[in-house]
Amino acid sequence: MTDLKSTRSIGISGLAAYIPPYRVWLEDWCDWTDSQWPKIREVVGRSFRCRGPDHSVYTMAANAVIRLIDQYDIDPNRVKFLGLGTESSTDNSAGAIIVKGMVDEALISRGLPPIARSCEVPEFKHACLGGVYGMKGAIRHLALDGAGSQAIVVCADIAEYARGSSGEPTQGAGAVAMLLEEDPQLAVVDLVGSGSASDYRIMDFRKPMLRFCGQDRSESHQVQDFPVFNGKYSTTCYVDETLHALHDMYEKRELEPSAYLRSLRSVFLHRPYRRMPETGWAVSYLFALSQGSNEDRAELASYCYEAGVDVDAMLQEMMSKPAVAELATPEQLNYEAYPLTMAALRAFRASRHYRLEILDKLRLGSDTMLDLGNLYTAALPAWMAAGFEQALEEDSYEVGEEVLTLGYGSGDAAEVIPFFVADGWKEATRKIGFGQAMQFAIDLTQEQYIALHDGRRVTGLDYVPNNEFVIERVGASDERHFADIGIEYYKYIA
Image (cartoon, rainbow, N blue to C red):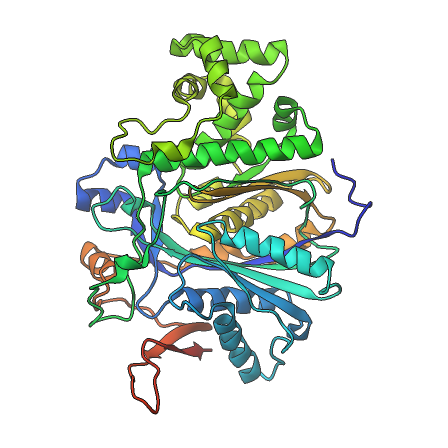
C-alpha cells in the first residue's frame, strides 16, 4: 500500500447525486420492442432513467452541486475550482460557469454567500472520461496554487440512443458531484500510483456535429445527441484500453499483477451496462495469470482446456500488441483483438474462481446500478457512491484499504486510479444520500417514453419540481440589437 503519510493527502470528502425521476423498466421496454428480457436483464440491467422536458445537462449538474453543498455544509467561499465533466454539452463556449451561475443564484436567494468569485470554472470533455480528468485537474489544483481551498467536480450526462438501436436499453441520465480537498474524509486519491492509456480509435463512440443538421426542435428545446458507435468494436476498445492502463500502473508501482488483483476486495470500473465492467475486469485477470506463477499459469491453462484453446497460442496473443484502430473498417467481420482470450473467458465465467475474483470484487453497489442505466461521465462516481453506501451498511471497508477505480473514455483512453479509504469514511458516507436520490421515480408508459425520447410534448407526467433547477425558457431572439437564440434561462424552485 502507498504510504499515505509521506505526502500531503488529497482526495474526495463527499459525493452527492441528482437522478431524474422518469424511469423505464427494461422488462416493459422488452415488451414494447419485442426484445428478450432474460438476455437484457443479464447483460444490461433492470431499468434506466430519462431526462425530463425541463432538464438539461446543466440543470442536473447544478442540482447535484447544490445538494453537495447542503449535505456537506460547504462554505461556498472556500470553493476555488468548479469543474464540469460531460459529453452532453449543448453550449460550445461555456460550461461549468453556467452551473456556477445557477448555484450562486440559489445560494443568494437563501441569504448565503455565492461560490468564490476567484473560482476556476473549466469543462472537461473526453467521452465518459471527462469527470475523471476533471477530478485529476482538481487534485492538481489543490496541490499547487489552490492549496488550502476546496474543489467541486460534477459529472453530468444524458445518454440517449436512437430507438431501435442496440444501445437503446443502455440509456440513462443524471449527475454526481464530488467534493475534493486536502486531508479528505472519504478517500485519498493516489495520482502518483495511477496508470493512463490513450490511443485514437477512429470510429468508436463519436459525436460529430453533422448529426444535428436538420433536427426538428419545434416542440422541444432538447437536442437529440445520439452517438455514432459500433457495439462489438466498443467492447474490444474497452478491454484493450483497460489492459494498457493497468500495465502502466503495474510498472509505476512495481506490482506483480496476479497477486495484486487478488489482494483487492473492491473495484469500480466505468459501467455503461452490467456486463461491460465484468468483461473488462475478467480479461485483466486472465492477462495477470499469464504473467504470474506456475500455479497462475496452470489456472489459465485449465480455462484454455475447457474452451478448446491452445494455451501457447493464447499466450502469444496476449504478448502481441494488436493495432485495434486497424479494425475500424466496414470490411471487418470480427472486431476481436484477442479472440483466443475471449474464448477462454467464456470458460472462466463457468468456474468458481469467477465469482471470487470478478463478481465479488464488483459486488458493492452493483445491485443499485442495475436501476440507473448509463450515465457516461457520472457512471463511475455513481457506482462508487452506491458502493460506499453498501460498504457502510455492511461495515466492510477498513481505513487505509485500497479501492481500485478505472475510468474510461469510449475507445480512446482509460485511467486506473487507486483510492485509499480515509479515516472519516463512515461519516462522509452517511451524507452521500445516493439511495435517497434514487427513491422517487415516475414509471413511464410506452407513449410517454417515445414522446419524451423524441423531444415531443408529453402528457400525464405528474411531477412538481422541488428544491431543484429547471429550464424556464429558451431564448429565440436573433436581432441585431439583442440576440439570445438557443440560450437556456433557468429557474430555481425552492
